Length: 269
Image: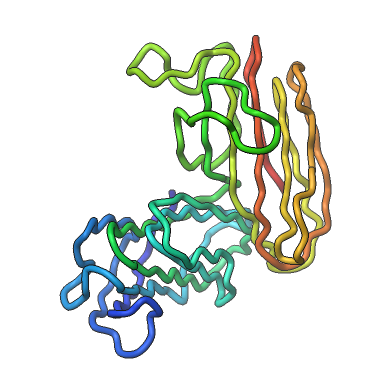
């Protein structure tokens, strides 16, 4: 994950980050699990809001970057004052990601978080690359719909570029949780933020099956299949180019391994 520069953390005793703040401090990471406690002196243990902001964060490369967030409860993420991810509701600790094309230079980031009651978790970081939140299964999940089983691993993948050969994503020689070398699968979920209209080329390389879709939520649309090669096959390249205009688009990729080598790459440009 990318190193976090200093953020001004402005705390409020309400869930809207409005009115007069009760505490202002500088933090050098956003990686907090307060449990049932208070995040700072003078701040209540429930029904509080924190606005983390830095108006000049340097990004050294022109490339895609991915933000990873874990929150309990709600959050909003702003990039150069544009809202790029909005999950402003009560929830248990949940992981999210959003990828966007970045021009090298300084950019403004605001991460706004609120806690209603119960546990309180706020984590935000970024990395250079095209990432999503991964769930790995010890069986072949369906191409679409609910996975129908419980994930063995759940984690942020900063890049989806794997060649496991004849091995497993999880070493089956250790622990009780296990993923066997064959008949396993993975599901990646994330979001793309597109700041201006552009062509985006989505690509995969897989052995065996792969399925990749996008949701046109910014324009009131539903799912569109980008790549569908849900078959047993050797390492195979697939791609699809799509014109996208400003907005945040949910994306999802699924992969399964049946036998032999195990290769999966998912990306976009």
